Structures are given as structure tokens and as C-alpha cells.
Image 1 (cartoon, rainbow, N blue to C red):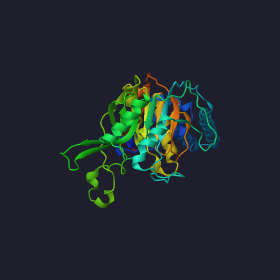
Image 2 (cartoon, rainbow, N blue to C red; image 1 turned 180 degrees about the vertical axis):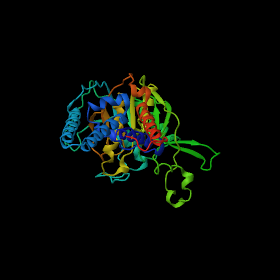
Image 3 (cartoon, helix red, strand yellow; image 1 turned 120 degrees about the vertical axis):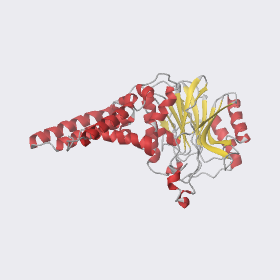
Image 4 (cartoon, rainbow, N blue to C red; image 1 turned 90 degrees about the horizontal axis):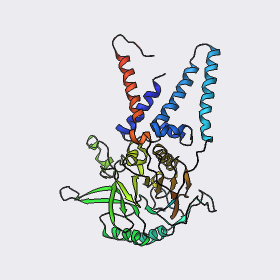
Amino acid sequence: MCISPFVWVALELGRARITGFPWDLLGYTQVDNSMLTSLAPIGGVMMLSFLIVSINALYAGAALTQGSRTRWFSIAATTVLAAALQLGVLYKPNGDSADHVASLLQENLAVGAAMRELAPISAEDKYQVFTELSRFPSISMNKGAKGIFRAPFNKAISSDLIVWPEAPADFATSDPEFRSELSYLARSTGTPVIAGSIGVDFDPAVKSGYHEFGSAAVFNSDGGYLGRYDKIHRVPWGEYVPYKQLFSFAGQLIANVGNMEAGNQHKVFELNGHGVGIFICYESIFGEEVRTFAKDGAEVFVNISDDGWYGDSGAPWQHLDMARMRAIENRRWILRDTNTGVTTSIDPHGRGVFTTPRHVRAAFAFPYDYRSDTTFYTRHGDWFAWICVIVMAAFLALGLSPGRTHVN
């Protein structure tokens, strides 16, 4: 029983490092528990998973205790402990100041879920419509509310950053029109721009003639193109086929899977004199990767995503909770800009300032700020999870050693 928390966390680490799919780890269930999430800046989300499994192991151990009186006392004590830990949902840390404003565009281009009461937009109109929305962002509404919810802006609404999400738009970094339009938007507003796009590098040496990446293009406030960030963690079976050679026999099944290539650099861009780290969609579930941006100098995170392909399920909200944990682990603001929602600004305690309605095409003004301090988790990553792997391996070795028949 005592080994179960170590095994659980070791398996979660394996999901992150081997299978590449650490979706919705157990610790995310506590993202709203401000008392327990105080552990995340030390040991990350997996430390929370360890605590949850430990409580459940104690409860199971209590239920198996010999003697009815001792059993019921142990169960009651464990129940009180679990209930006390859940009181952390009532603790609300003081809010962080937010002296800057970002204009986050929600393009609402259909993927997986039909747009609602919105006519399709032609390719030639996208630049005009998206640019106009970005110039004049709205104050966001509460989800499902008709009234206006005013955020705690500390200055007049004038954007310090414009962000366009990852989306199925025909934007490519190699396209001169894309470069020209986004450069003009940045230059005319005096505002840096980050825009989801397809990164293209032409290469006659490869069969296709080019390399393709899921990317974010970055433009300075003077309109200069600073480069792009290429997504490092791609979506398995969506953007690429993992272990492709092993599945070569299934040509028909994998024919329509994307063939995106992986980036290899955690770039931090300097915008407005501050470091900005950008991660794309699915990458938000990799705590070890996201913390690298803060370690390398990012003072704010920008997460662009296309959650439309989840449809109207619980997945967009699960994805949001995982991004919230990245804010907590690194004590950074996150500007989370999505194609169809959930678009929001997340403070360093993992709280969304407000969220936009889903399936709405608009740009919204969100508050954010910069932080340069680093947490223990930012500096050392999944150290706690690796300790769990070592402990599990030690128990396994002890159990398999000659003369041992079992391990307590």
C-alpha cells in the first residue's frame, strides 16, 4: 500500500516522457484548491498527484485495519484529514496587479464544432476582419452573461500586445501577404503581434520540397519580423504519427494524419523590453517543457490554441485547467488565446480574470503583467517525480532480490 503513491507518479512521468500524452493527470483535480496548489511551485502537478494517492492509500489502509474499533477510528481520522485539505478551496490569495493589456483575438473558424449564428468568412476578408477586431478589443463578458464584466485594469485600455490564435486559417510565415499584413498591423498600432501560423522552410533536398511546422510568428512594435516559435510537442495521431515505422503496415489508417515536424528550441522573444515565452495548444500539458521558458527569461507566457476540434465536450475546460497549473507552477501570467474558446488571462495563482463566450468571433482586452522571479519547480523541473521513480525501482529491486517472497 505504501508504494502506491510512488508507482502512480512514476507512471504519470512515463506518460509525459514515453507515451507523450500526460493529459489530465490526477493533480489537476486540485487546481482550485489554493492551499494544495502551493505545492505546485515546488514539485509541480505530480506532487499534488502524490498527495491525492497518499490520502487514498491511507483510507484503503484504514479500511483494511484489523479490529472494528481501530478500523473505524482510522477511517474517521483519514476522512477528517481529507476534508481538512479540501478547505483550501475557500482560501483566496491576494490578487496580482495587472498594469498591461493584451488584445486576444478569437477567430472562431470551425473545427469539429459548427459556428453559431456566424457566416463563413472568405480568405481575402480574414485579414481585414481580424485586424479591425484586434485594433478595438472589447471588454470581455462573463460566460453566458448579457452584461459587461469590467476587469481590474489599472490604466486606460490601450493594448500592449496583440495575439492571434492557432487556427485553421491559411496563414503561412512564407507568404509575403501574411508578413505584410501582420507587419502593418504591428507598425500602425505600435504594438507587438504574435500570430498563429504555419511555419514553412523550403528545402529541395526533401521529397515534399519543404518542412512544415505549427508555429507562432512574432512581429515587433515597429513591424519588424522577429522570427517564429515552432511547436515542439505535436499532437500524436493528429499532427504526426508516433513511431511511424512501426505502423508502416497501416498505410490506409495513417494516410490522413498530419505530417508536421517538431521544433527544437524554446525561444524567448523580447517584446516591450520583456521576455515572452510562447507555447502552442497541446504543449500546455507538459509542465517540464513550459517551465523552460520561464527558466530562460520569459516574464509572461502566451498560449495559443485551437480547441475547436474538441467539440462541445468537457475537454476545452480540462485543457484550460492544465494551462492554469502551468501559471501556478511558474508564478507567471498566461495569455491564453484560442480559436473558439476558452480565451482568457490567467494570473500567477491560476485564476482566470474572466473568460470569453465560446463560438464567438471577437477580440477582447485582457489584463496581464510581468514577473521575473523563478520558483523551485521552474529551476529544477520534475525532480520529485524522478525521486518517485527511484523509490519505485528500489522497491521493485527489493521485491525481486533472492530470498524475498514479498514486499510490504
